[in-house]
Image (cartoon, rainbow, N blue to C red; front, side):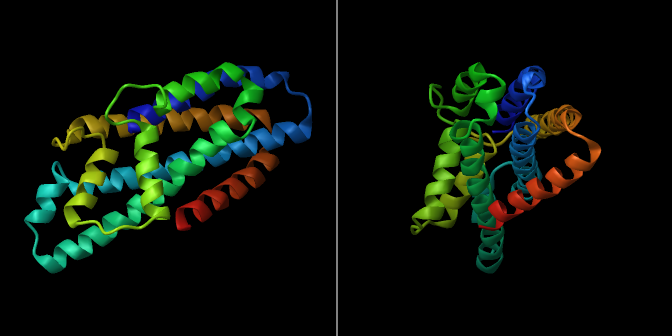
Length: 215
C-alpha cells in the first residue's frame, strides 16, 4: 500500500511543472485546494498505517489468537476504527484523482499512469484499488466478521499477500519514503499560491480530510 501511494505522489509531483501554464487565479486556487486535500488524506493514511504497523506486529492474525478474549476484543475495536478511516480515505482519494479535473488539468497522461498504480490494470493479489474497495464496502455494507477476518484485512492493508507474515522492516522503510515524498509534494504545491493563500487553503484541506476520517 505505502509504495503504491508513494508512486502516486511522485507522479503527481512530476506533473506539477505544467501547473505554471494555468493563469486563471481562481482555477489555480481550486487545483491547489484539491492537491492539498489529497495531501492530507495521504498523510492520514501514513499516520494511521504507521500506528497500525506498530501495534499489529508481524502477524496480526496470530497476535489476536494468542490474546485473552477481552484484550482481543479491545484490540480489534481499535484496529477496526483505523480500517474504517483508511477505507474512507482511500475511497475519497480515488475520487479526487479520477472524479475531478485537478489532475487532468495539470497533465492528462498522469491519470492513466496513476490508474495502473491504483490497480485497475494490475495483475496482483493486493492492489491499492482492491484494498480501498474491500475497506470501503465493508463500511457501506456491514457484515459479520470474525476477529481473524479483521486481522487479515490489517495484513492486506499493510502489504502481506496470501496471509503471509508482514515484513516490518520493509514496511517501515516504505512509510519513511512516503513521508519524504509527501514533504516534497507539499513543498512544490506551496510554490503556486501566496503564503496567505496557502495557509487558508491548507486549513480548508485539513478540515476536509478530518471530516473524511470521521465519516
